[in-house]
Image (cartoon, rainbow, N blue to C red):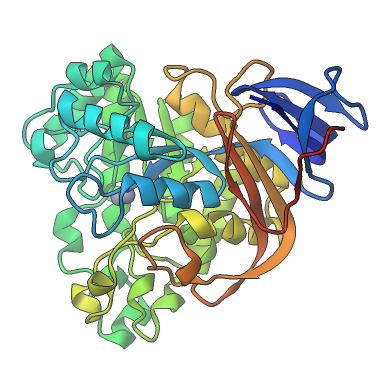
Amino acid sequence: MKSLLIQGGHIIDPSQGIDEIGSLLITEDKISWLGKGKTTPPQPDYDTLQAQGLIVCPGFIDLHCHLRQPGFEEKETIATGTRAAARGGFTTICCMPNTNPPLDNQATVGYVKSTAVTEGMVRVLPIGCISKGRKGQELAEMGELASAGVIACSDDSEPAMNSYLMRQALDYSRTFGLPIIDHCEDKVLTEGGQMNDGIISTRLGLRGIPAAAEEIIVARDLALAELTGGRLHIAHASTEGSVDLIRRAKEKGIRVTAEVTPHHLTLTEEKVIGYDTNAKVNPPLRTKRDIQALIQGLKEGVIDIIATDHAPHTEADKRCEFDVAAFGISGFETALGSLMSLVHDGQLTLATLIARLTYEPSKIIGNKYGKLGTLGIGVSADVTIFDPDLDWIVDTRAFASKGKNTPLAGSVLKGKVMATISQGKLVYKDDLLSLSKEKV
Ligand SMILES: [Zn+2]
Ligand SMILES: [Zn+2]
């Protein structure tokens, strides 16, 4: 296989503290050389991707997505989901176990892993269940799941409402070195809830989901993490109160990490006015005040990472009354464009944004699958190249994902992925980017 030179881009790699113009050489499936400024590699024979004016960084890592296979292939498959991920700049994605059958045993985890190898475009790392059948009653065989290669356990879309079960899971998380990811929602409080609880929900006549429903379970989980010394990861934090609770827990030394989604960082509950079911998501879109707290948390590192919670649905799941529409946003292909608005507004630096999408999630996953989230020499060549300033219109017909469900359809985003390289393979390239094949 010929080498590929990514030439003259602005290389940002928070894992090595690199933030300057340079070039990167990929040989076979590894990063083989990195040169600063205008230096060229010692070896002469390579194809070239011209990256002048573009950002070159480690491939994005998504700790939270839904690929729907097995069981819900009408919504998404591993093939379509990983293609969408590649278009979004993601080279490693961790899929939630709420499939049918759920990923609560070695066989189904093995099925997802082998399907990802044969049909996938990017690396897929499965997450196993906390409870058998995601029923919230009996602990899944975490030892079996750990040896099957899951990188965490979660009953996502369901919280582990049974506190004793959550305590057990956190106890075992120490034994098996697996974080427990919780979808924090007090189901009793959210029964029938459709959107954020407040003036807008009252005006629209939709039942509200209060911030407290999330914060009660975040607080409980933090108490249990303290009690057990287990590793807790809070999925999709969406409220100011959650950020405060996590901040205080970290100050106390509790082993907790947390994520926030692009939509909770950029969209408010006002998106629901007009009953757009594509803005129906769980946890719901909140207020400006919550967004400010989440951004502040992300800056400080109280919130460790950004994860998409890519949740594709069919048109039928969304083209219906608001009350019966499914929760979720198809997020891979708009993630970078949405998040860049925070950089353009001066709320987040590019280096912080990239760290929260690359190096920080790699620390949560660990080295089970080799070094991730870095452009270090000798590591798997997972690279994302993007134009920070390019305006583009979100056209869901062009999505690789089967899920066209996004409240951003038709809007203009500034910042676009131009190429994605996963394990040395060019898995996505925008037509605007030229690949020169001639000898240099
Ligand atoms: Zn969830
Ligand atoms: Zn989810």
